[in-house]
Amino acid sequence: MAKFSRRDLIGAAALAAACGRRTRPTRTRNHPLDGLERPKLRITDVRVIPLSYVDPKKNLWRSADYIVWKTDGAITQVFTDQGLVGIGEGSPYEGPDYIKQYTEEVIKPLVVGHNPFDVELLTARGNDSRRSRAPWAGLDCALWDLIGKAVGKPVYELLATDNEPARTIKVYASSGVEHEWYAGGEQFLIEQALRHKEEGYELMKLRTGTSWAAGGMTLDKYIHLMRRLREAVGWDFKLAHESMGGTGVTREQILKEFCPVLEELKFEWFEEAPGGTLIEDIDFFLALQEALPTVRVSGGERFRERFEAQVWLDRGALDIIQPDSNVAGLTENWYISRMAWRRGKVLIPHNWHGGGTTMANAALVASIPNREYLELNMTYNPLKEEIFKEPLRVERGWMRLSDKPGFGVELIDGVEKKFPYVPGSYQYKNPRLAGRS
Image (cartoon, rainbow, N blue to C red; front, side, top):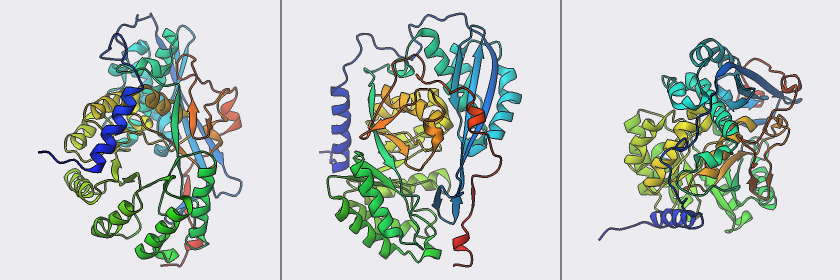
């Protein structure tokens, strides 16, 4: 007789509940474009608007040994002969100036003159590296915005081929990048978690903070802090934990010392980032599965397309898959969500940037049957809302999507003047850590 862990039962119950409250459409579509009348529409131009917000104190948030002093955006615009304009975003981490140059020099000549409804043909090209994939992801998302506008439907309705879409989606607080181990970080982290709970979020994902070596943090101290954190927020507030990368904690210590604490404190999931070869990484994730019988294992923010994700899903290495539409694009993430659903897995997309990324990931979450949360970066970033005329907002941990066609949001006039792009890396070495070992 087959044995099931509590994690299996939790996942099965979540998926059953999700599917149970969303009735199946009377006519199932195999693809988002099935049954849509294809209008005569031609791409005439593709442009990218690089954006930046610079913190006056040049100290937005901190992690490891660096400080983030600005946040960037890279909004792709696709223009058509009928006056419709679609918008999307590729990962700003790959450089807005690079995305602009690549899009306008490489992508534009290939797509001008084509119909936006050829979205898969037009975007299934740039998978050779994550950096070159970002401009294609921005194009892909912008084409879906165009398709929605052309047929008069929200993107989340188009993508919902196996279930009824949701107009409201649950959001979790992605946080824990402002505490400093050299300046009272332990208490700051606890107070931050309590603040997110008071704001109405039911789950917070935290990170490991500034450099452990320089700040005197050790695994023993950190475990003690995790117990204090759980005691402070109570058992009714959910916690998730991101990677231990950069802390000096070994994989063996993660498996033997840290995983039992995550189990003891009933964390929702543990998100670890790949660091070696594909096989080495998958084997480590499988070891995490053994070490975490109830805590779910999450990963996949770097996946560029469905075939990368398939290996991990087929091996059973992930309970939660988290591809990002500003890396893979909406088309690939729709396929990945379906693959995960058919294997009984949840999709919670990585979503760390501004509103251009959030609008696409929110549409994906709203459309799929195996949804649970949308990640939302809790650091201050006006590019999340202030670039739109009617932005997507969160109230008490819930985001309500627009019923307007496409993504339902439009850029403000003069957005590039309000948030002019400032070239250069978004991070610099933390001077507080100079000379510390």
